Image (cartoon, rainbow, N blue to C red; front, side, top):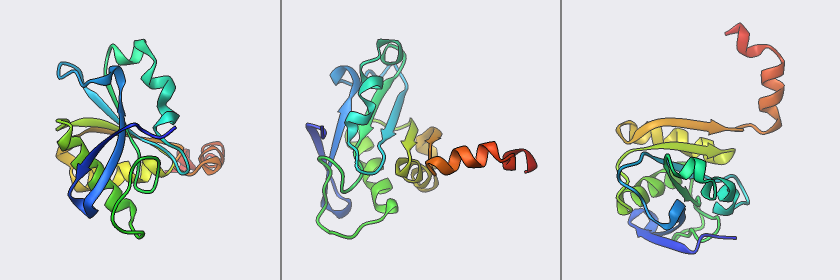
Length: 147
């Protein structure tokens, strides 16, 4: 299910779909922005949104990338860089100046670009399954220990 809430941002005249845990941001808690994977929506993060153990400690802000769910823009051609800018602008519009950022699969590539574009806005990137099954192959091959 796509996000039911949207915010308008300037980059590419984008409308950004999002969901917030507990339906509001608590300024006393840190925020984790979560960017979903290809062909999914913010519903990917339903378990996190509904986990009181997690949401008692942090705000969860799930944002749909360009071309996914309720997020749209005025062009058919955009990049991960565009999505990173759109997410940063959505964060600003929602009053989130600094956040941890978690990206699943393609969301991880977007999170990496967010960190490059605005390092001062990040509390830390969390990339999850950037290469899908290749992550497991890479981990099990021992390549990480050879660095």
